[in-house]
Image (cartoon, rainbow, N blue to C red; front, side):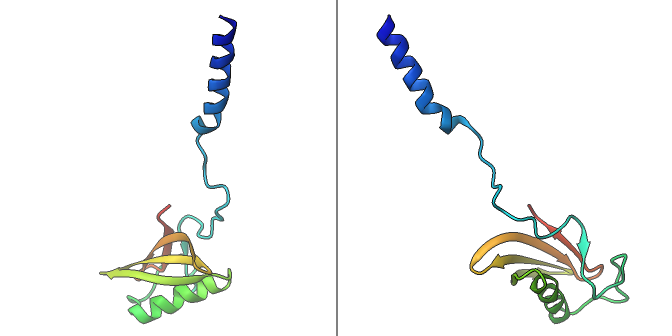
Amino acid sequence: MKYLSIILIVFILLLAPFSAVYSDHDRRHVTPYGDFCRKCTKYGTCKSLMSHDEAKQAMRDYYHKKGLSVEIEYKKGRFIKAKVKDEDKVIDVIIFDRKTGRVRSTY
């Protein structure tokens, strides 16, 4: 009985680290919820729909200030999905609205 309880305790102690849920505390939150680019007004409304090149430049300007780069994943209608990278590591995936200038993280 004594050996069984020791084996049970050792078994529980070995499995304890694997049962915890680990989160990615290392990741920086680089895109505040509902932020907007400065190419549009303070309230996130543009006078007209930005071209794809203007939107790409707006995203580059926005993230360049934070020392990051942007890689366009795809364009669909007025939205652009892009990866935000720190060197070669993807740290955020965003949706950019070309009409309002809004930048939203998908995380």
